[in-house]
Length: 525
Image (cartoon, rainbow, N blue to C red; front, side, top):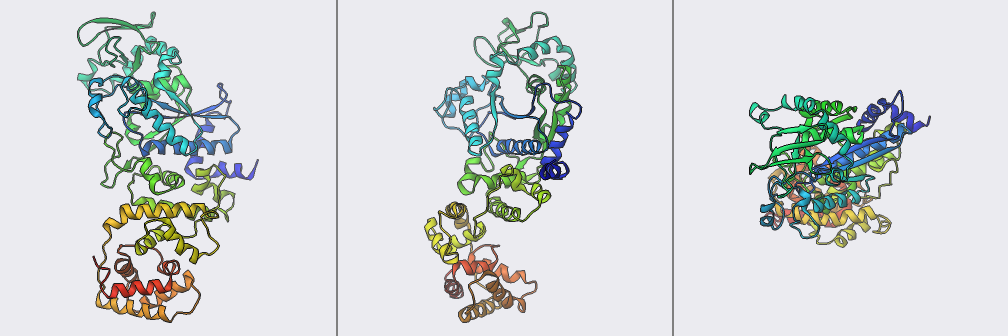
C-alpha cells in the first residue's frame, strides 16, 4: 500500500472521513454497476449561485479522496431539476414580464429572458456548466427533462406506480391534513397547456402504468407515467432518482436534512439502497440571511471571480462545511491569503499533513507552488495609499520589493495585483475613513517617522517590524492599540497587514511622507 493511500485511510480531513463511509458500502463486494456514483442536484429556478458551486466542489473533494483510498472507478453526475414548474418569476433576470404567462410550466418550456438559449432552463443549465467548467470539475451533466423524456426514468416510474400506496404512506406522514387530501406523488404535465399540475389522482393504474385525473377546468385525462408525460413531486423525485441511477453519495444543505428519512424510505420502497449522505450548513449573506438563488443576495460566482482566483473560492468551500458561514465580499481577501499560506506550508509537510491540507483537496494532489510574494491584504493597503488605478502601479512597488519578480515568473502575483486594484476601487475606497491621531499617537508617529528617517538597515520585513514594535512597546498597553492607530490614521482602515512588511513594500521614504501627511492633517476625510 502506498504511503499516501495509507495516510488517506487514517486521515481526519472531512473528505476522507466521507470517502471511507462510501468505501464501507462495498467492503464485502464491489458495486454491480462497476463504479461508485456521486451525485449533486441543482434546481435551475434562478441564476446559479455560489452555494451550487460549493456542493459540486465539496462532492468533488470527497470523490478525489475516495479515488486515493480505493481502486473502484467513480462517476460524478450533476443533475438539473429543469422539469420543475416555474412557480414565480425570479427577481434578478431581464425582461421579467415575458415570463409571467409561463408560470407553472417546466423551466425547459419557459422562454429564455436573456434571449441566448432555447429556454430559461437551458440558459441556467448553460450558466451552471460554464461555471463548473471554469473550475475544471470532472462531471457528467444530466437534465431531468432529458431523463424523463428519453425513457431512462421509465422503469422506476412504472415501479412507483406499482408501489404507489407504499410511497404515499411515507409522504402522507409528512403532510398537513389539508394537503393530504389532494396530494399525489405524480405531477401530470398538461397535454394542452404544458403546465405542471398539482391535482389529486382519480386512479393510478399499476398494470397499465397510467394515471387518471381531472385538470383545473374539470376535464378528465389519462396519461402514461412514462415518456415525460408526468414528473414526480420533488421529495419522491429525490429518492426515485437515487434508485434509478444507483447513487452512492449525495450531499445537500441543512434545509433538506429533515427530509432524509423520506428520501431514503422512497428509495428503499423502489427496491434500491439509499446513498450515503452529508448535510452541510447553509451560506449566509452579510446580514445573516440565507443566500437565495431567486433573491440574488450574497456573493455570486461571477462576483467572487471578479476579485479573486478560483482556488480561493474552493478554499473557502473546503473550510468547516458543517458550520454556517457568512459569505460576502469581506471574506475574499482572507480566503486568498490563507490559501497561499497553505500552499507554502504544503511543500514542507509529510503525507499525513498534506492530506489534511485544504490545497491537496482543491488540486487533487497536484499542488502548485505559490508565487505570491505579497499578501493580498497588503496589496489592498498598497493600492489604497498609492491611489492605484491599475496593476502596473502596484508592480512598481512589487519590483522594488522583490527585483526578481515579474508578471511572467509570478502569474499568481500578477493576477492578484489586478484583483486588488478592482477590489480596492469597488469596496475599500468608498468606505475608507481616516482619523486624526490623538496626542499620544501623534508623539509615537513622530518618533516612528524620525526612526525611519535615521534608519540605514536592510529594507526587510522583520527588521522594520522591530522598529515599529519598539516605538509602540513603551507607549501602548495593549500594544495592539498602536497598530490599530497606524491602520486608522495612515491607512484609513480598522485593521491591516504587519506594518513592517507594509513599509518594506511601500518604501521607507514613502512611509515617512505618508506619516508627514497624516501629521499635517492631509489624510483626514
